[in-house]
Length: 149
Image (cartoon, rainbow, N blue to C red; front, side):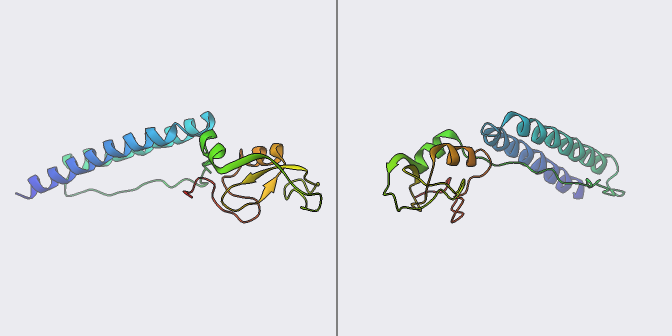
């Protein structure tokens, strides 16, 4: 009877792995190609370890010892906004007064700015577009532009 219980648990693990893969592939479409390749490589390594552990638990149920190697360094995975998210979050070509202040990114005066809709902070269009290639947050208040309004 206990063997049936173990088989159900293993089936649940495999089912969960497949569901996770569907989600992962959907999310990876938004990643840059270099980051996508790194995440997929690590995902394949993790799946190999999981299948090896499942095999060991089936073939040697009383002697499962889990020794999972932990990498010396963790790899950063950039999470960037899509072009559609950026376009939804900003209003380009907003004319401002001469005393409106400076662009918080380049520290130069702003005449025509691109404004982040949610928080109202404005920047040169080239500055904020460049910023969004590295970050999903407003450079001033840290609001995540991917968030819902």
